[in-house]
Amino acid sequence: MSCYCFLNNLIKGIPISDKYALVISARVHPGESNSSWMMLGLMQQLIGLDSDAEELRRRFFICLVPMLNPDGVILGNYRCSLSGRDMNRNYRRPRKEVFPTVWHIRQLVQSCKNACQDVIYCDLHGHSRQNNVFMYGCDPTYGQSRTPGLLQRGTYETSLYCLRERLLPYLLAKQVIWATKAPISNDVFVPGLM
Image 1 (cartoon, rainbow, N blue to C red):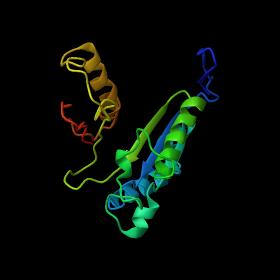
Image 2: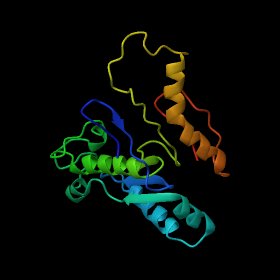
Image 3: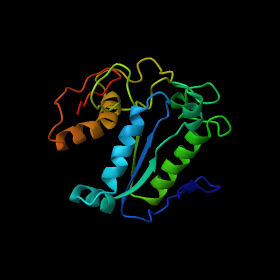
Image 4: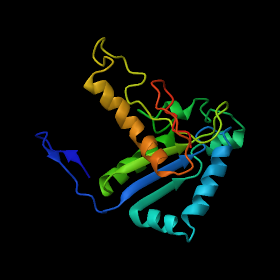
């Protein structure tokens, strides 16, 4: 747990586990049924007896959330929840009464951050136009109003934002022998086609 006391001093929690946390969710968009198949394959692999699965279980505290939007799936929606809104666009500040599963997944990730060394959150999706498996890196500044000149191209801050969100896809692509080598681009996609 980390918090601030009345005098604004940071009280830093000490992780209770030497493991890293891995939180993986799927089906935030009901129409992306292929994400359920990816989750099923992942679950089967993780409970398997091969050495890679054993190593992952040994090193990571793993939380799987197979379906973030069951109401939307039951209703036959393609992108929206019961509220008629895209849950995937409401991670930054979700209202618990409107987006309860998004609110709870954020709480889960925060709990993992407090209890473990660090956390990786991965949300499985399907794509209507792209093939294969790829990763997006989330830009924490996307959609925020930016002060002109604050994050100018080529500055340290810009490089840090780009690197931080693209490092995991890059490292994964280096480890997976069947990964297609694709350049990291400057657009919203983080190709790391695998």
